[in-house]
Length: 467
Image 1 (spheres, rainbow, N blue to C red):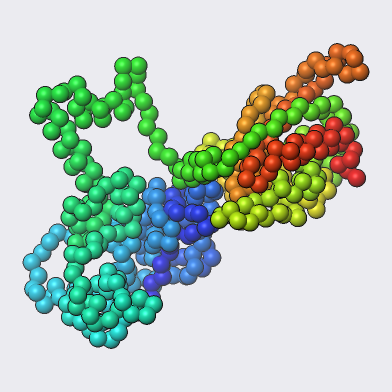
Image 2: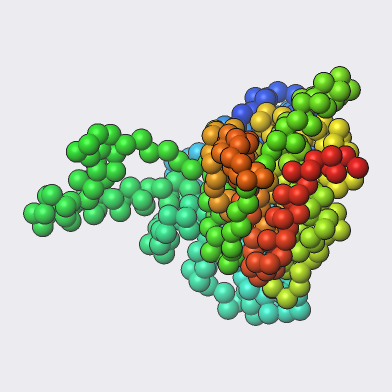
């Protein structure tokens, strides 16, 4: 029996994934556990393995397709086996030209589809029999029985036109584009609205708008002129770039964080003289033992970890109903990693239990995986605090947005030779600006200031980090 390959739901907030490439073609033999395709989710690129052995019978969605989670993207079975008539498969299977068929044959076709659709529903035998006789899809009938069970009366009172039949992908496109589906005629089985039907309605709407505006004589403000302006104006051309799944989620989450959390910002200048000296002394030893180069970020991260253990409210999270605060007695440290495709935030878990050497290794390994697009969803989960470092780009200071559900994030800027007063004399010292953005629902300004004071002390007296 053929087995579905579905778009995996890699994380509770994942809604869709984009197929990057297929490693197998239709007709190829597949072994269980073998990599079938690569997808990009809202966070990472990941490989999808086959859950069964057999022949790749059908690729429902090609490379480049954006597919909702848990929707069928392929079928695996025995060579020559017919692909089951599931709705997801029907989405990409070409609809044959209409042929005249007998009423009996049409009824048999409807009956077969209904039996497949209804197999997993809670319904009485009488309701099922009546649905088969009338060609009614029980998935559209609201059951009035216990736990939604469909009774005979529910089916008898049901009218096929009461609800719109639409595929998941078509529904997603319509919702995203704000399209009214009530006037769309579906080309799928029993009038089901498919992806091409929705896309077709978009083209019709644009054409109709152009015709109406042209007929009124307002050529300068016509729809065709507006459409052209989207790609060209008096200053030059414009490239339209679709948002990737990762970019969409970054946009959504940053908006949610910015508009939901009342934040405050604390800036502190730290003298990096002693830390840079200690880094120079330990660099060769750590390189010899681990093969990794210790960076300023590693020392700052160690200072952040030790400071968080002294200030639990900065290392906390807030429940969704805002009734409870979770004070973590450990540190799962996120390090923001920027890439061309967007931003990922891998997590160093159990960072509070690591030595400097262990932290150096863990940070390099997780950052490398991020840059190579090999992070797994669980390697970006359960963060308690985040560091964002733009110092390597010469940034003097910046205000980062909180990576929820964290209640704070630290922005690390560049180190700059700066004249300062020490013991009544002007001297030049390497100064770094640190910026804390904190959620005022959990962290008070005083607590944020105390955290930054502790962090400054650790950085300016770095030997304490090794004790």
